[in-house]
Image 1: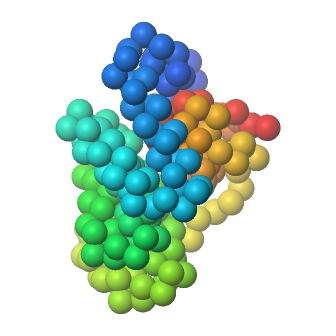
Image 2 (image 1 turned 90 degrees about the vertical axis):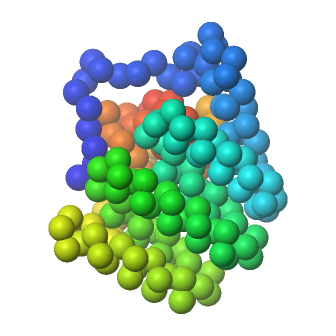
Amino acid sequence: MPVRRRPGHQRPPFRRRAANNPRLERSLARLRYANRFMEAGHFIDAANIFNDLARKAEDRSIPRAPQLYIQAGRALTLAGEIDNGMLSLNKGLQLMLDHYQLQRFQVASYRVIQDLRKQGFENQALQLENTFAEYSKNRPTTPVKPQTQHPPLPPSCPDCGAVVRPEELEWINKNQAYCDYCGSVLERR
Ligand SMILES: [Zn+2]
């Protein structure tokens, strides 16, 4: 089940909030760069920005910090920096638990573990499964396969350029969801 908010309680889109806030505008610009670096295969450059934005988000307790760490981790593992990648992946998944984003944790951890396996990091995939298996004693956090019954959204966020994964998003209603990275509202196509 996706996380839902009551209708009428939407935050304004990031770009509108950013228009009057130079710090947010800078973060959005850097996020765009990071997503472009990812697409171009400049994984280390992307990871540095994602990690930095994640740390800043975490300092301000912004709920998107986990997604940014996970994206940094993915960039690092793609660059072959598996140890550093694992630090970021662990951090992101742990933060999701700390923020009680349990449904998103389930979907994200499944994707992260599958992703590691696809890249040939079987030991690290097992390591994550073991790390987070502990949590399933008290919390329902066993990684689950995402369900894909969401309406079509744009493949990437028009504001920050991040890849859109409908099954991991926070849905506002059946046609709109928040971008996982910048918080912009994504509309059904
Ligand atoms: Zn976005």
